[in-house]
Image 1 (cartoon, rainbow, N blue to C red):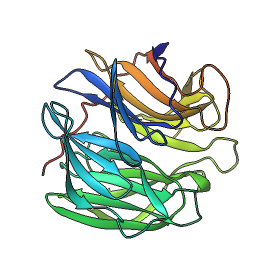
Image 2: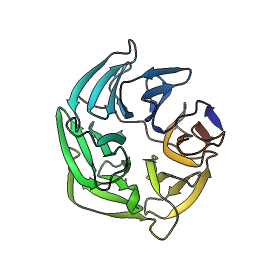
Image 3: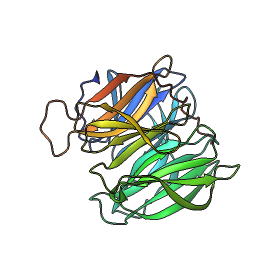
Image 4: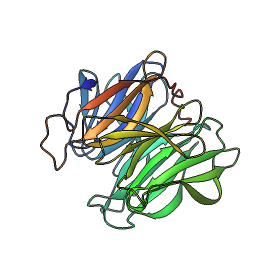
Length: 273
């Protein structure tokens, strides 16, 4: 069940690299990128990544999207990200089927409506949605025709249609509504069948919803603050989940967990520069 016992203050952004066959994840508050038995220290908050090729990741920080070279540890800024706003940092993010990269920002102290959701695609960074308090649940069903995201404070996972280039069209609608529950949607990922897997902050679980948004089952995660899931392993049936130790003192909090499932994940999409 324990994949890695490193205790992250705010574990986030797990990414299974399909070429390297490795799981990468972040400790946002620790300013670190992790993989098994290795870590890289950054100067500021880092939270999410997409893979460019075997050695390079697109990494989101508090002020930029950067190209990070795993072979030598060097980082080069690709484009600024709210670099003139000292209130915000990056949070949840994921590459889309069209080769773009979606990244959410939020207030460092979770200031209301301080964040946004952005998309980088072939050199262009565009703000998609503003007035977001806690950006999360950025994920893409396998047909590539829509995207999901959430403001955790609203307890709603939204869905928006995409055009052929992956840009949103029309207004988002509610895909999963948790407002009458105690569940708060954090990170999320889709499998190849269109089921959504939602890490639910404070609930020690990853919940599964079918393509119609109906609850199917849940996987219990020992860390109370489950933060983001990812599929990986040789056959993409292993469900990984990061957790956060911030504000807690349990020995299981902040570790990264792995659960074997009967579901098959999607291969993480490549970021096209």
